[in-house]
Image 1 (tube, rainbow, N blue to C red):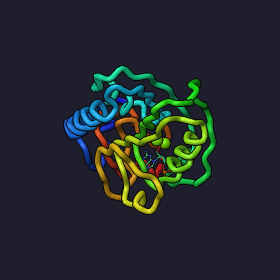
Image 2 (cartoon, protein in one colour; image 1 turned 180 degrees about the vertical axis):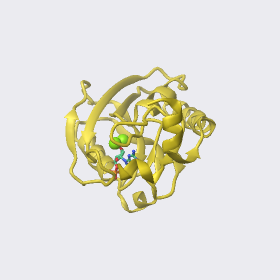
Image 3 (cartoon, helix red, strand yellow; image 1 turned 90 degrees about the vertical axis):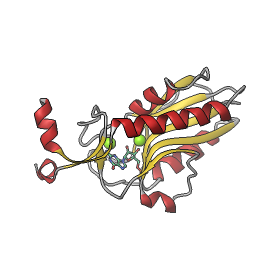
Length: 184
Ligand code: 5GP
Ligand code: MG
Ligand code: MG
């Protein structure tokens, strides 16, 4: 897939790399302030949160630990199934830790609300959420996002870690895909 192929697949860029960077600066500043003098463990949700984790963590002045979980709720399609499976669990004991879950996007919120209660049951000092993107349906979910990048419309987006059938995660911006991509 060369650059022109990718360009062909993009319908509309919703957030540029600059938009994302600006918001990450703000989120990092707030996190540094809120966790000053406290231990902090960032928990990234694979694979989508890889870009947010890398770009957010490098903006923090706070010494942090990082761990990863892989859960599955979507398969390769575009609709949440509501069924969450742990594909890879944390290596870290959460007892007494301040946990900040790092996510790419909250749509139905099903994945996160499940994850928050799962992590809370492990005896951490605190569990909060940072997510780069949030869709309108998340309003109905019982998850409170402490650090949010952008609210976006109810469209399927790719880029900045987000995939369609495992492609497009590497795009430095957030975009919708042209219909021909789904058409096969
Ligand atoms: P939720 O459980 O909140 O509905 O969605 C959880 C996961 O679905 C997200 O972490 C993300 O991996 C995936 N997802 C939700 N909306 C989108 C989207 O617009 N594009 C992509 N590529 N993935 C999405
Ligand atoms: Mg995710
Ligand atoms: Mg996906």
